[in-house]
Amino acid sequence: MRTEKDIFGLVQLPDETLYGIHTYRAIKNFPSSGEKINPYLIKAYLQVKLAAAETNYRVGILGQDKYKFIVEGIERLIDETNDAIEGKSLLIYDKIIVDPYQGGAGTSLNMNINEVIANTALALSGRNYGEYNFIHPIDDINLSQSTNDTYPTAFKIASIVLLRELTEAFANLQTELQKKENEFSNIIKLARTQLQDAVPITLGQEFGAFAQAIARDRWRLYNGEERLRSVNLGGTAVGNSISANRDYVLQVNSELNKITGLPIAKAEDLIEATQNLDVFVEVHGLVKAGATSIIKICNDIRFLSSGPFGGIGEIVLPEMQAGSSIMPGKVNPVITEHTIQIAELVKGHDVVITNLVGSGNLELNAFLPAISHLFLKSLILLRDALYNLSEKCIKGIKANKVRCRENLLKSSALAAILVNEFGYDKISEWVKEAYKNNVAFISFLKEKNLIDEQKLNEIINREIGVNIE
Image (spheres, rainbow, N blue to C red):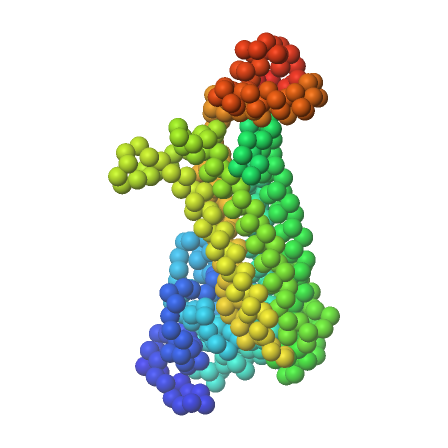
């Protein structure tokens, strides 16, 4: 065991633990939620620490003897975090152990990372964990920094990375929907408004409309990245750069830009950028808008595939798993159901994020940990759900041409395209008579010799661009 101390007293920690007394206090103070710090946030935080170390060394306030071990330690930890992101290993979570939901505006995470970097660097220098007289978690690792500028900066870096990945997921879904638009372009069917029969449409047009909605969400998210590029790194506690070297403040963001490869820049007003997190409400609002589109499309797909014999049944979804423990042969639209639940969760996150962003006070928002955790969680959950929806549902959708034709011909929907030919009053009269006699509208026209097949197809082709097969 080794002994560490803070202003509250002494604590004994196992020799092999890379975290220190500040992390120990955090895990004792906050109950475990069972969730972990987002790995994208950990990586971004380590990149911020790397930029700080490089800049502190360049401006002459971090010695060569410490610098080389600190940088090597951070790079090793970044490699471990990359493994966690790729699902190869969760070794980083033996070290970054604080809960995502924590008080203190994120100080617990900042100190957990500071202590782990310090002890990793100490081990690389041949020293024991806890020998902070050589490399100190605050004096060296946190040099020129505060939780209040490093955490929001790391959060924005992680957000940009994940926002780009979510944008690609929307692009992929758009592509799959456009493929269905082309595949179904010649299948005429019944449109529906207010869940009632409407006018003829092609199945391709329906899927094309889905694709266009997703394209709009894609571009919203693409443009939303710009809101996240301004960071407050160098502002330290409240944005006025107290305790930070002037040259460090001028250079650190350029170093971070180089490390991350992202177009981030120092905010024009570091005090304002430290106080306010409204950009996350704005950007998450765009994510929520995308989630709303996804819910609408998934519900439409469920509706169109309903039945398959007692419902609409105009499209057939891939069969993924047995749908019932009591009804043999039943198959449910489980992929769309999963996607809707994820999208609804994102909408819920938006409410919490909005409320917590508005609850900041004066120079700082103390609720950044929950804001960041839910924001990044939304991006990952929705990203993965969209790829799943594209691969396991949209890609395998088939058209039921027979049902599309059957539903259309049973309806009076074709009446609308005959108005110009016969007049509204006459068509209304025929629709009413067909309905009264429980006869399909088209069958009624043919029985009464009011229109022949060739003339009907000419009109349909003129109005819709395709024929009824």
